[in-house]
Image: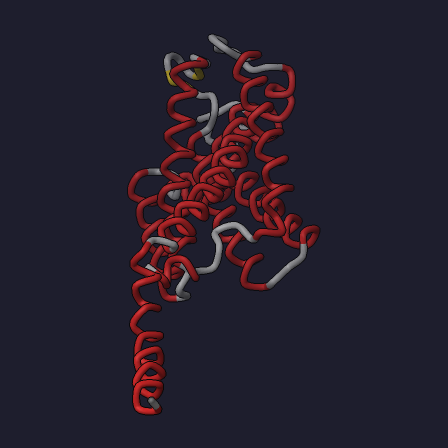
Length: 243
């Protein structure tokens, strides 16, 4: 229990306030786009412009898009999570391992719920907003970047820049694949990216608070008790001999 309490925080303390602001802004974007495209089945103006330049790529790039898409499928995402969790545990970062599993699950779960609530479709009845693949990839990148920022001891500006850059790179790569394969509109991708930015930092805060509280339970204090007892008994014995 003590080791859990002393484990490196899932979110570096210096980044918590700024990440909270980012999460709030991202949540606002997700809700705004959801309201704007609720029940829609056609691309918006930006969707049409970006989609025209991205959709129907050549055979070689299509293979790249399919490889990225696989990482968001059940088998690919499971393999990625297992590999990342193993890495975190080898580095003795248990909170990061917990955050990856719980954060990714909550992010994808939130995206799935929003799809049903928003009801935007593509290619018939396929629910599209927000992109779960993009949300998952971004969530994984966020956890990895948060861990790297914590281990490197980066300050607020550098740490936040690293986290946002990693999230943007992962979201852009997976988002491009989804648009190129015709699975999502560009605004679906933006919604998925912002879903991860809203859910993952909030989950990290909960993981840290529960970890700190779990480590402060009496079991930790009980470990300290016996270490002090012999010294107290020795002192008492000395006083009795002196008398």
